Length: 234
Image 1 (tube, one colour):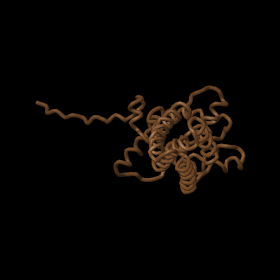
Image 2 (cartoon, rainbow, N blue to C red):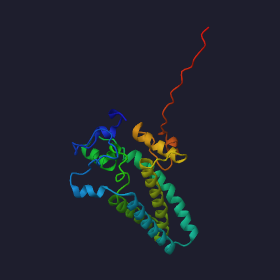
Image 3 (cartoon, rainbow, N blue to C red):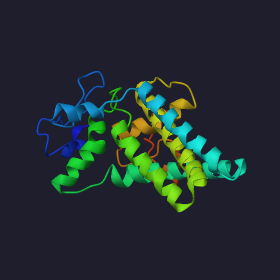
Image 4 (cartoon, rainbow, N blue to C red):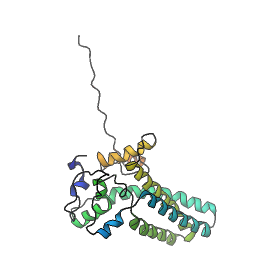
């Protein structure tokens, strides 16, 4: 991507004057987010740690739902609502929060922390996933609100579906940046997301369900170059 095509890279981080203003390879040193080393250490997470942590949270939510929910059908119904609720949340967060545009330096700094650094270095294997210091507190808050809105059994079942959607999303996100995914249908997801990073960052926001971009008119497909036609001269 050319430097002037990426707003997120162009503004970079006003509090990090040494942050690069161009794409950085995933094999290079991780782009710095915080000045303090102890804060920086919390921004890294391996794929294995992510999967194990998500499995533990998912099992806790499901176990709580099984113990307290009135029936298996009630659990399955809430899970079936929770998964698409995440898919829509994913799109809205990515489009309106992670790509939020502002001239205020403090907000630019937050956008850089949440997402701008990822656009500078999209494929670093320890920076592709959301770190646990963000996932766990926000997940606990969503679980608590879900329980408060209904009860502990049904709220936990909804959260289990919501968190399952999140786990599938970030797993797929990691894969698009770090796995080959050369065969269909996996190649479709990879192409859709990499176009967002390298061709049109204000398009292709959804990772789990790319058809949402078509629904909300943010889908981007590069135009095919027309082959020249040859005519027979008389």
